[in-house]
Length: 246
Length: 244
Image (tube, rainbow over all chains, first blue to last red; front, side, top):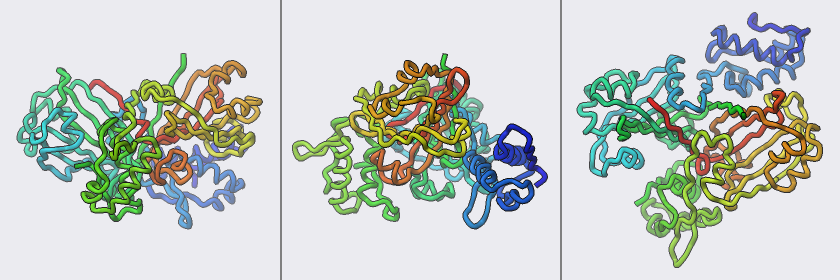
């Protein structure tokens, strides 16, 4: 518990000091995922503070997604930290997950001749063909999101032999192997209930809430090149934005 | 025939599953205003469920004013909700009203002059007693967001009289109390709606929703309002465009 420091003479409320101590310890990896946090009684006794103060501190950290409290078992550092992403940049989500150390693997590659949203977004006719890839991004042993990629076979011939590293960017792959310059993208965000198959793949409960981001990537002629459908279980991600009013 | 799938192992009843998926298809513009819905018997046969379940789903959607029954045919009666461009996120309420060209209304559910608050709300308000009000915002009588709003208790005397009028209050805050907003921060997260919030939004319990916590700051940098705003994708569907 030597990472906890409390100054009773400070004007900063004790529960805020307590929460700050835990937050810093988690950031500095003195506390790691799934580590057990001290009980209320232990903290009360050691620092001669009331259990209300400890409860308030734990509530703050829980609201911030850093810890989880399990009835009858105790308080733990969460297994996957909650990412706090700027709402202006959906692309940044993937970079942020990568910075955490997540890695992607390919679960499936097949060829489809229809797809309810991707085909219309890519201006493909029913019957034309496209590769469909499903990738999962893992944080240690927890899948944190999945990506479905739809890439027309005409623009991406022999994709299965080209795509070697699932962690490489698709925009980079389009340029280096196919000479396609991706210059812009659009991203639609909606909140959806997960179906059984997606829930199973992402190790969460069916019907759990998830962010679904459907993205279309365009070349410099504004022609759609490929489509992605990314599913993030809501528990790992929150969006932030600040609006300054002039 | 349709993009509807029934999950027979789900805890959600078949009629609610059909209702939810149709609502989403309508909202996303995949079933446009004026489109005929499949005859209940045909859809039921395709989904391998009782036709009474499909009829029940249609009636639930009729109650939400999303479909109508005319000349023995069910039709989509509501325009799809346009996507909200991120820039318009500043005022979700105004942008939905503007984009959907719908008539706004507000229903104030309750007002508590001295609500005890804790956690982040207490910390942000700098006190643990708040003036709390719960409101539903409608467009064409369809609920689109439910908001649980906190003001520092005592800061705006008699504001409750304004809230009771079921009107927006920002003009009033400026004119009567001299509040000038300098900054607004928002944190958005996803969750499954609990029973109460689901009822307010007219959707089944457990429906995936956004919870946006909005904090508004005055010119002195003090928080004068915190709102927890619940909305579903049918009405809050964000889009951004960016360069690669």
